[in-house]
Image (cartoon, rainbow, N blue to C red):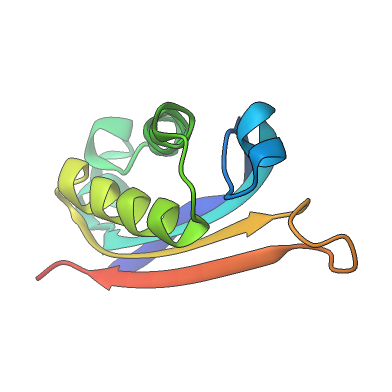
Length: 119
């Protein structure tokens, strides 16, 4: 029984961007994460140990984004998706969108979206 779990609008303050002013001050990024996996074990046991722990997902992605100080949100999205597939063995696929609200003053945000499936 494949299902999807995830996070909407995970906010992380980080250094991201190409311009000097973006490299000087942390700014927010908003990350949506969807993880597909087989819910059978978790639904049967009702135990977090059999589920994808979204607290752990939030901590892993936040730590990566803050530590790496990315230039491009494209790289941020690719590395975050790869990290989740590597660390969360039961996850079959990841859909991840990174939004940067302060990128373009005339727009609500800039964004990238990736979808990666376990090979």
